[in-house]
Image (cartoon, rainbow over the protein chains, first blue to last red):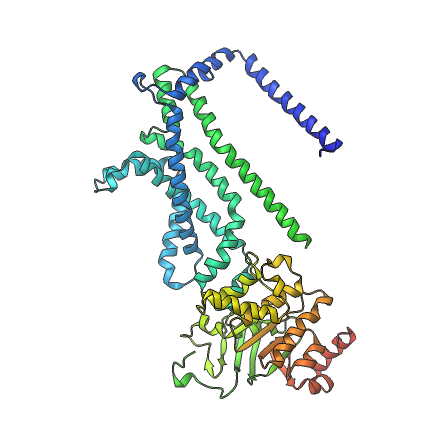
Length: 277
Length: 259
């Protein structure tokens, strides 16, 4: 199937990739501290020990800890999709009755986007237990972490939704309303389905970011991958565990990144096909 | 629509009555006192240059624009008052736009059945049956399962008309429905409108197709600067316009070879 030109460009890109990688490896190997770096950060033996863990020796499996990141990510993602949608729909509503809610949503988005996520995690992780409320104050660190992630990311994602809603042409609203559909029914059946199609790539982009940020919940003491790596390093004075955590996070985020690219490419093809017609 | 109070009723047996309608966009006054009465089954042609207010008038009638002054009555019922349920009013008034505005993420059938199901609460089977009948009637039976971007402009516009008809409106507003079409696709849409007129549908048709307006309209209104300058039966208005502005407009149309 590959034409001559195509085969040539594949060969060229393969060669240039090899050269660049080789240059980087050479630079790393030639650096004065190369041996120390390789031993401290990329020691295969320590990497394996960190991956499988040894609670008796004082550190946990980084691989197993990643499971907590995955669970936090999935739960947070679902909640964010719902909360952000509600916030976005409230913010773009026009009725005078909803004005108080609009003000609350606007303030929420401004504050939640403006405060560094790490501060939000601290505030909830240490603040909620201090309140001594029944149920609220007796949750695990991971729950507080997920709550902070949801609060922070919903603010961002609600803006993505809002952009998506704004990207649907006003004539679609007019067409829907002219048929007697109420504002909410128009939103539900006509505007949102089109809006969501437009925002899938930026939405996935935010979720790639969210996957990594689950690592921040470690500051509350949850044994997630980054925290497990830290414990290994503290115990053994070898940082190879961080390399393990990094690789594991890459294994999570890269497929999602490729999938996002795929969707963007598909969308472009579809638009082009539509433009021809 | 139920009558809420006797005081709101006016206009006698007219299907639509517009009184002293004014509408501005910012400093730009687009409609400067429109008075128009439409009898049941009447077909009104609205002609006039771009920017004369034809589209705005139609959008006001469908409550898509909030009016600044005046009143609009549908079947004698005030529809521009403060306590009016605009969703309810719009159920009775169909509008078809220049740019079709079909829902691109829905099949033709879903475009047609959405409002009857979600607004009128028609059971799915019934809505599908009705949509099938309408699509058949306008030669779109085979397009039922297609998405709008697979259809020609003429087909899309016919689907848009069917979509409006599926709500069984008492009044249809057509806003330059052939202006976005390739010339060879215009006639298939005009045929549909002609069929509606013959079926007794009350219609307000804003159009640049003077020949069509002359053929189909029972009355033609010439708009300029947000006012109805002149109105009358097409034969009279096209052959003996009394106002100088109407004459000038028609002369330009004739010079452009469009009449």
